[in-house]
Length: 262
Image 1 (cartoon, rainbow, N blue to C red):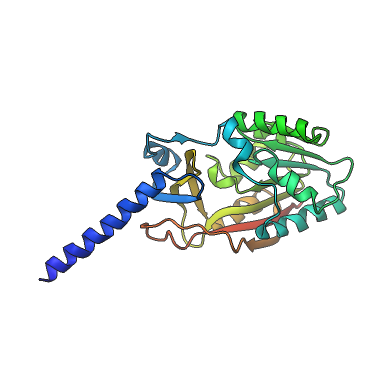
Image 2 (image 1 turned 180 degrees about the horizontal axis):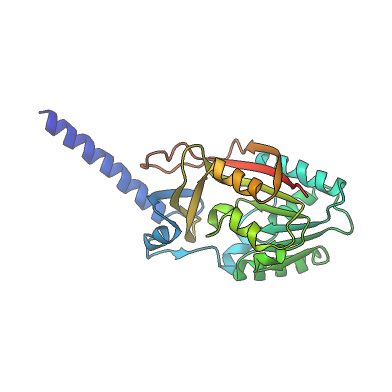
C-alpha cells in the first residue's frame, strides 16, 4: 500500500517535470531555466537539438529587449552618474546587446558630451546595434565591438545581465586587461549564496548555457584584481528559479560597484 502511494507520487512528479520540459522547449517570450550541469560545456551538450544555442541572431536582436529603465536598474544609474561626476567618460558595456542600457539611461542621465559608450557583444547582435545607432543618430557616442579586450584602458567596465552567459569569469576578464578600468560595475548578475551552478536558459528563439555563481566568488575575484568595494545590492523584483533542481529556488540577481585601488 505504501509503495503504491510512493509510486503514484513519483509518477505525478515526473509528469510535472515532463510538462515543464515541454514548456521550456516551446517557450517564446519567457525567461525559463532547466537542468543542472557540471560546466558550460556540459550544459551545451544537453541543449535541446530543436533550438539554436546562444544570442548570435541579428534578426532576433532588434526586438528582443525594450529600452526602458527597470526598477532593478536604479543602482546602476546612480553609480554611472557618480562616475561621470568623477570625470569618468568611457563606458565599456560587456554584453550590452544593442545598447539597451545606453538608450534607457540616457532618458534620466545627462551624458557628458565627451562620453563614449562601447558595447561588446556577439557579431549578429553588434550588426543590429550598429544599424539601430545609425537610425537613432547615436553613432557619435555609441560604438560596438566583438572583442572584450578592447575594454583595456576604459574608465568603467559595466556588465548588466551578461556575466552569467560568458564562458569566462571576472578574474579572467580583468587579468586580460593591462590597463584595468577605474571602476567595475555588475548588475543583474546570477548569484547563489551557497554554491555555483550551471543550467540552461531559454530566451525564446534559443537556449544558452548559464552560470549561477557563488556570490563570494564573484566579489572576491574583483577585489583580488585590485579593487575596493563601494556597494553591493540585490535586484529584487527580477526572479530566477530552476524547477526540479536542488537549490534552484535560492538563486537571485546581484549588483555591485568596485573602484580600483591604485
